[in-house]
Image (cartoon, rainbow, N blue to C red; front, top):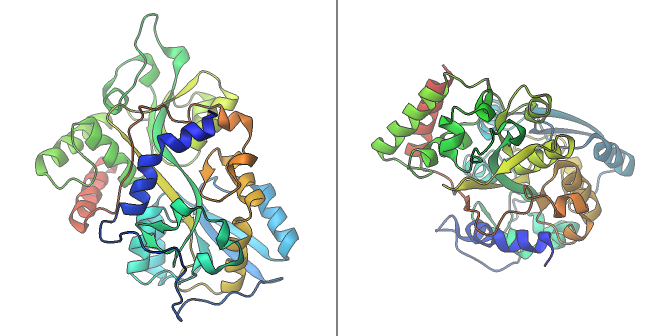
Length: 369
């Protein structure tokens, strides 16, 4: 069995949660919606496109290929977290950008607020390439509002060359937050309340989306103590900081971890024993987008296996598009950061309740203040 197949088996629970995670969503048939409010698709051959996506999350060469193939002039701006994206769209009533890249739960929240257009991705010419497991996802049943981009896990990476002789390698979120070992001398954490608070909850014995006051207080106390030594609270430039040694350990997505290890072989990606979050990022069109046909042309172009594979190979993630796995580099197939061990505890966390989100915001603002 090759490592890509092993990855598929290891992520079976993730796919199940993608499908069933929002219990009220259930599993419907695979036909696309025929909602008349959805935007009809006409391929664009000129015009402009404005993309808003995660930092360092789209290869420059691929952008040039898109422009050459379509004649559409494209610009990209970047953000650090889903919360930043959501705040931006809320403040502008969904205007300013034509394509955005919300993660799973953010798609649901933005759609519920009327900040995304219906695009019916399954009806696009390349919608047929969306893998079955990525069609009836809990956050967007029938893919009315989104199309899949890349998916992965959120763990942490540390410099194994800093382990003392006979020292046990870290294997938990508790190690990440509390160890005084040399490998944890200059830690970094994402500027992302969902990933940050979820990790602290797991490390202190709680569960993601908890509303239990005792669990939330334990997570806040852990973050308060951690702040005394954390070097960076940032989702930007994590790859560069780990390679340069500015951070000896940092929270990181597995694809970014793959890129780090290619340049610094002593860096190891950790699958924490308490469990870790998986995520799926998606293309979507804001409700106030001005260049809708250019946006749909881009999304359809990105569902060509060769195009999405170029992004997957550059970023170090897999994608929910048929034909991509066969086009992935061997370095991805053989990297433990990309192919989880069989005993990895990986969970796609459904959208938390408003109460939980408000608690997360309070904890995170206190941590950063």
